[in-house]
Amino acid sequence: MKQLLTAFNRTPPWFQLTLGAILISFSGVYVKIAHVTPVVAGFYRMFFGAVALLFVVLLRQELRFKGYRYLLWGLFCSFWLAVDLVLWHFSIHMNGPGLATILANFQVFFMALAGVFFLGEKLNLKLVISIPLALFGLFLVVGIQWDRLGGDYKLGIYASLTAAVCYTLFLLSLRKIQKMDNPLSTATNLIYVTVFTAMFVALDVWHQGDSFRIPDMRSFLALGAYGITSQAVGWLIITRALPKLRASLVGMILLLQPALAFVWDMLFFNRETTVVSLIGIVITLGAIYLGVTVKAAAPDK
Image 1 (tube, rainbow, N blue to C red):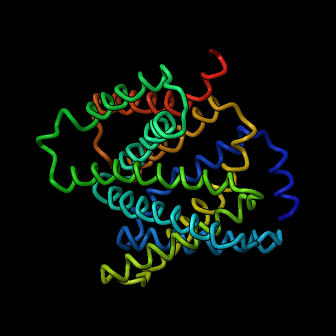
Image 2: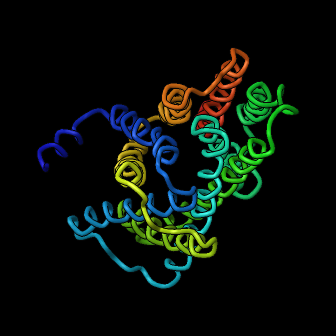
């Protein structure tokens, strides 16, 4: 195992990031095939992810406690991730993993807007172009037949977009944690967030009167793979590779996640897709790419 990890660490960063994006792209598939409710799927993603991350952290002897200020920020951060997960999982059941994942990636625009209005970042031409372009792409995907869509389908779209806002709040608070003095390692940060998020989602499961029981082996394997590959392995790989690559290349590679999620939706769940919808998906992904690479344009000015 140690030799395998050493060999993987020697691979190019773009390869590592690509593998991480591919692993996470299957997230919606795991949620869809597990015979549990959306909120229970969210809990087990965090539960199995925490077990895998705990193994890594203990192996590296990196588990630390940084005081109650760090704890409170961690709880605040994890709360928004928990809400994001519940809403996104709900949307997966209503709209399918492909569209739900693409809509959740609208967090790119909310993050950029937060940077402009709250973090003192300059308004960029790419941002000005990308937001209306993304909305136009979304219109092509769902807007033309909006009146024909069912109530649950529309509710799923609203849930995904709200999840994107919640994910933005999660990222902003995680950014705050990582900028504190003497920050924890990536794996340790991830395990704290994962455990706290599992606690919040578990409270929601209890509040809804749902059951934590995993009904069959198929669901157990799907949820186990979801937690280990998406929450633990996938995010560890991505966070390690991010600082080693140009922002523009990162944006392009990470587009694999929503793009492949849509592909898996068509392959595994026979999603009906028109030519107009496909054009809308391409436009939306292109707009997301522009949004991801907003900061990359700053040095060129």
